[in-house]
Image (cartoon, rainbow, N blue to C red):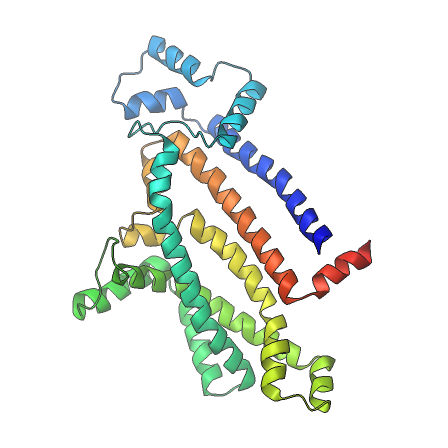
Length: 314
């Protein structure tokens, strides 16, 4: 187990450097001059003299390897520069918005798990039954409808017509319901059908037949063995989607005016706020890496065969 964890932690290091390189290259591939973008955001007329001064101040006149080394050192100290629009440190601006995105991401993930696990499990247990047919309809609806359109439909029915939930903003748990449900619908469509397929596959495995011949209770076989193994592919999907959600649920945050990380990124794009864009790209990549690492470790706990296979390869 220790060697498996060590290998996974070592694999994170080159991914982190690749993420920093990607965030650094984006500035130099963009046709927008960072110095000019800063002056435009500050409502200063960009003359040649001022542009040259700002390029020197930002270190843009130095060789690229030197710029990347300085950029890397600043990233390690969580120094992402100053926002062109607000003149505030980017990390302080993002730190204020990350809790809202975390709340929305975890809310949608919890809602998706609570709904999709029973639907997927009972769809497999009662194949071609009423639950299975209903899960097909839910999956078709959740996978086909765009998030922004679903968000507006939920607002129309639950806020405008029924006046049960607030339309926009954040504050109480009631503000979290509609955006979380909007995000969760697509996840429910994927995970419920994925879990159904894996449960059906596991029911055909020899260990299930062997457990039944030994006289083990059906609920023990299904809960302790079948569901525990079948949920592993779902965890992989959760890790990928969790990174995506933490990186910024851009569309949903915009629809519900949710003061999160994704909405801040959209504003940065329109205002050409390059330090914010760089920070968003880097943090999103790191969140993907960390979430997938956590999922790998959870899978090792749920399915010990993973660590045994690693030892066998040695």
